[in-house]
Image (cartoon, rainbow, N blue to C red; front, side, top):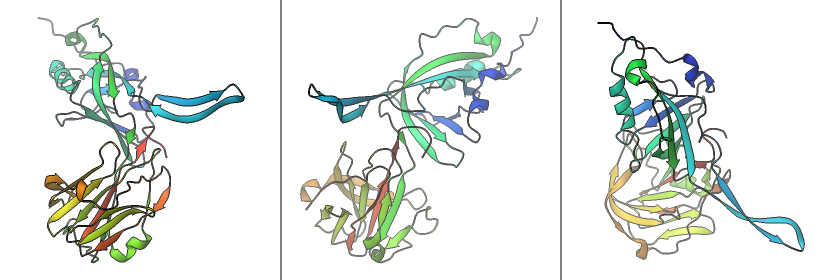
Length: 321
């Protein structure tokens, strides 16, 4: 019986050589599998013609007047971002498990289970876009992949939140200067003393305003956080072992209280068994950090607890300033 020779895909099909030097791209499936779609390490690679890396679709809102030339801009809104991946699923010559590879990859495509498209620039900065499967463009097969050992697809994804998410900024202040708050193996962020809170600032490197998430880890009898003139007052006691998380994002704006579970290696930690304490709050004026600006912070810690802040920038594009 004659053997079937699997033909490797033409090199020009791969987008690897067309990416900026040092640029990396991955697709993290909903089931946790990671695919290197720039270099095709696992046998799945982007081809030329990728869409979704640049500006999202936007609609400007304007006002016009018969007595005034031109228009007046009143705002804008970004729509869902369409992502298009011209993709190659392939095996090298002599490797005969193409069908398994193809099945494993397509398992990551699901309309209800999003994955994360990550782009890392040559400086090591990563931005991420959450996407769900939309359609395959009515894909048709001319030659069975069992003969060629590879198949080209045109995959459409939807980024319902259309902005690329940058790396989260983490800051912390301790009422007692507790630099060992996280114990050994602390991650790469610094807990400042309470005295430095009076001069604290934060810079938003994103293209849009960013909304902080504040965490007060007890013990603290009362705490004030925010920016000057736009404060959030916590008038009640947060005892040791407890924490209060205040999410200022307008899409959520929650105040949750529970047991503090520290994560000394991977991040700040989280609260367990959370309950809402929104109705128990004092003065509350949620404020964002404007895009591209450095703003002073107003932080007062009454006790030996810790105030933590996370700020997640949003960007128009997958790389850039």
